[in-house]
Length: 85
Image 1 (cartoon, rainbow, N blue to C red):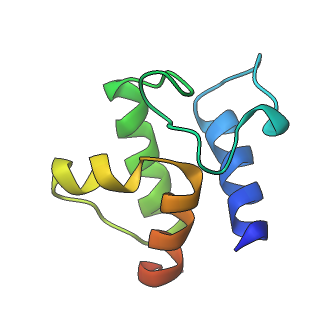
Image 2 (cartoon, rainbow, N blue to C red):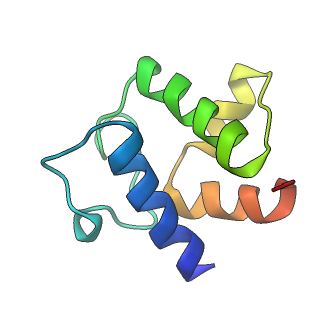
């Protein structure tokens, strides 16, 4: 799970072009939206595309996405359970 969390941090930084953020600055339980990393709805769309492309996970319900993108730890747990790639 730790390796997947590190991988997700790298992918989030790369996918969202967060050049001024390092992997060490993203805590596994830090919120990704709002006060945490400060992501917005456009970033959420990018993360949905990443989940589909990299892990074979298709999200169709925005409410589901809101729960999944709570933190890196929550994303990693969801991916572990639902990945097809």
